[in-house]
Length: 551
Image (cartoon, rainbow, N blue to C red):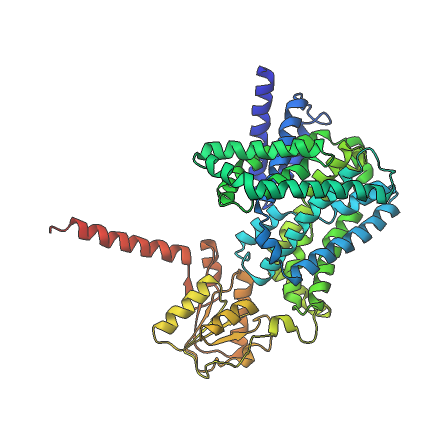
């Protein structure tokens, strides 16, 4: 027992150091954990001996992960996915499965293994994408909302695929009809059971448990692992059972509290899954998987974004929106590896498939992280070639955005970028008596602000002709609240080329961007974080000075 404890302590220390290095390289920490598992495994250092304990923690971690995914999948959100999220999600899933299956077959994989690999290539990492979009403050943007929508479609597909494959447990040669009938009655029974639990049993039970936050956490883990075990017993998989356990609590008033408490536990336990995965990889067999991994990774990095762009372009979105949304599917996820690992447990695939998908995951996650981080400058370089994915009139982004209604002929201030900061700035200046004009490329934002009676112009500052359509000649100020440094640089350069002679202010989203923006020669750089802190200090100082004065 002492040796096992020491082994765990050493693995955690190594993982923490490797995770810190991954963050320094702006990479997801799961890549570091897999590498640690490989290095600590029998193929390199041979540090891992507590295989049973690590495997158990890994299984619990996967169950908690699927439980949290189900917990966040509220029925209300499913009903409001929208046509673009549904069409893009299903289109990408179908395209990737068909082409991925063909590529896997060409690479010499047997049919069932090729199907597993093809399905694994369809899943993108919700955790990584949401984190990257959140860090870039693009989660509420048009392409961010669309991406989150089709990620929900993928999450549903993950569970459905696990159910279908687990229905073939030990019966991979059974006919399709027999598998579907077996799966159908079990899903029907599970649906009836869940309905009864969600309607009459779980609400009072969860309310009673919620009287203690510690007890609520214990109940959540118990419920997730309990249904995971029951799901395996019923002929599904542990993963599917854990997902249904989370889904059964998604409509309760306590789902956010449960999710917040489980997120840290989920991340900690998943560490052992990736350590276990790296430890089990056979390095001697990975050499033969390098070429297939390069082929499949290239397909994921290029093919998945292209099909998303094609579908969104056909549905009336601009190439910019399609490109930014498409980059979010340019990688496979931790679910892909979990899905293949489940196939190994069921006896459907071998270790070679797991090694192949893991290599594809390492390559695509690492590269797509940088693609998403630098998506805007990348689009600027590729824009001329991406016009083919855009209709002559991108009607879905133009409809309902009247470019002239309410537009001032001579505004005092023109504001580009109408997110939370830009929109509040626009309303504040308008209330202060200034004549304002706002511009943004998100049609939903422009329509909402137009309904408030504000003067709004829909358009994209990356379009060379857009500034020509705006009344900039008499404007005293142009304020840019665009979300990234590259867009701000492009706007400042475009204003100079346009001959704008007024003053320019730029919002620095990150304090470290302030120096770069000042070097552009703008008249003012607004730093929301610094400005908010300075105002808070002034407010508190005034209050404290008043309290010190004698009554």
